[in-house]
Each structure stands twice: as C-alpha cells, then as structure tokens.
Image 1 (cartoon, protein in one colour):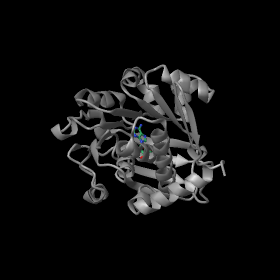
Image 2: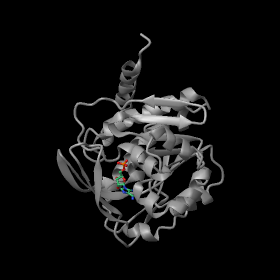
Image 3: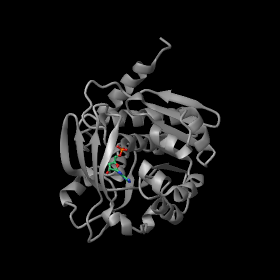
Image 4: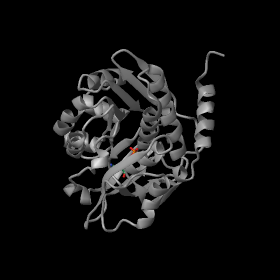
Length: 301
Ligand code: AMP
C-alpha cells in the first residue's frame, strides 16, 4: 500500500566530531521517503527552491519515489545547520532558514488523495493540517514533530494530535510537549492528547512504544562507528511505516516487527554522512541485520 509523506526537503550542513558536510541533501521527507521506499511505494509532498540541484532528485527517482507533489519555488531551499556534541545524542541547531517553507501551501495531486498510509513529517503543524484536510480516507496517520514547532506552534500541533494514530517523537521532545520529565508519564500524557500509540526515539538507546494497553522496548542496533546521526529519526519512521504499509494486520506483533525494521534502517543511516549509506543500501542487507536484531534481543534461548 502506498505512503504519502509531507515534510522538509532540505540542504543540510552538518558538523560531527568525525567530520562535516555542507549543503547535502537532507530534510525529514527525504530521509523518510528513501527509508520507506525499501518496503512500499512513497509519494512526497514538499517544496524546494530554485537553488536545488537536479542531481539531488536522482536518488528519489532511483528509489522509485513519486515527486509529483514536490513543488518548486523561486525562493531558496530550506536550510538547516546542525552541530553534534561528543555525545552524539546531543545536537544544536546552529542555523535554521525556513526560506520557501514560509509560503508553502501544499496542493495534493489527485493521485495522492487516497494514500492509505500518511506520514506527517517534521514541518510546520499548520502544513501538516493542510495535508490532512486534503486526504479522503486513510488506514493510518503517523506524525513527527520537533522542539522548534512544539515551542513555536503548540496550539496548531494540539489540533493535529487528535487526528493521528501514531506520534513518533524523541525523548527530549516528548518531555517538552508533555511538561513531564519521567518518560512513562510523558508518554501517558501525550496519549491523552490524541494518538493511540506513541513511539519515543531515544537515540543510541533505542525506541519505546506506548499505547493504552501495552509497552514495548527495543534497543538501537549496537554499532562500533556512528558518523552522523542526522536523519536517524526520520529513517526510523520511514522503515517503520514502510513496513507497516506492507504488512500490518492489526496485530501487536506486526507493529513490533515494524518498529524493529525502522530501527534497522536507522542503524544504516548513521553509518555515513547524510543519505549516503541509504543510497547504497540493499534489501538483503536490511534482512540480514533484521536477523541479527532477533539474535540480539533473544533471551529465550
Ligand atoms: P532527525 O535527525 O531525524 O531528527 O532529522 C533531521 C532532519 O530534520 C534534517 O535533515 C533537517 O533538514 C530536518 N530539520 C531540522 N530542523 C527542522 C525543522 N524545524 N522542521 C523540519 N525539518 C527540520
């Protein structure tokens, strides 16, 4: 089943203790789309500026991502600059230039309006809402957000939350959104805001899933070398929803397997800068690491 994603398509400038990259392809929609494309067909809703190089779009085409909903504008492309600390779980946004995003008003192509799975990637919540309003029927809507929007657009975000099934959010943002420090209390508080499931991303410590009736925890795949954590969250969401779109049967088990596939894809993303590793990834590598993940977490032997 197909997935529609709305989010940023960006220039990212990244600094980590291991190196730096200038104006590489990034953005929440980009990472999500490439990650999800290993499992299900993906359609992007987003905006790029006049300065966006054609060669950056090639990766999407190679992965079969539908770009009909990607608008082109005469302004400059969204640009994010981030710097990671020695502890790669901590990063600062050094620059954030919304540019074309400030006048983005998505118009969904007709072929997008029946997407079964929808991911409201990290972007202004009012844009997430505009997308939701244009969709006719869905099986599942998942959503991500970020400190920038929680702080600057909280009331808009509060209107989105009752309309989604799954919120994917990182731990510090869950605390910020709920005002609770304890992560379990934060998750419970977020569940009361609307979603039926909350997935809390904890960087190298893995993912926690909360619903009214269940809790599930998975570690992150242990890696000896992590070069660039950028996009790990969006790749997790892409692998997760991509797998769900391919095989969800309503069971808790299929939700859990999708969480592990999301973690597997994210573990590849961080092995190199930007989208480099995902661009070279194969389905066989994903399956191999999924099997290792089963061994990693098996304590019934
Ligand atoms: P992640 O590391 O998965 O949390 O996401 C990193 C991506 O988010 C980068 O590629 C950025 O381009 C993008 N990004 C950074 N800040 C924002 C923002 N305020 N809204 C939307 N996307 C953003």
